[in-house]
Image 1 (tube, rainbow, N blue to C red):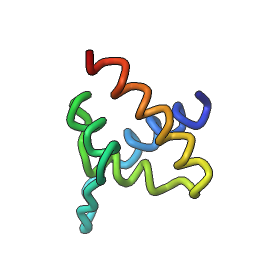
Image 2: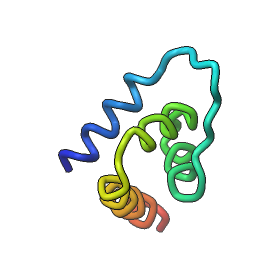
Image 3: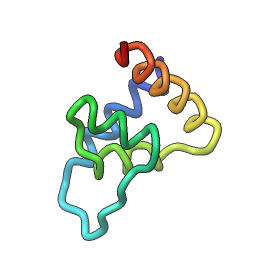
Image 4: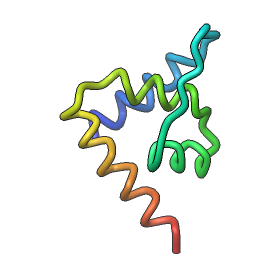
Length: 70
């Protein structure tokens, strides 16, 4: 949960004007849309992590998407 907490804080931190516009793919995009989070912020927050941490975030996000899809 600590990694996910840092992920969410990074998403808020990156809510500034950037000259680039990255868009998340797959589950990350679905998570951003479902919870009304900006796709650009989610992408920047997600890619600020290394591969191992992204794997943890993927699992947590998948849990959020599965639990609330009923």
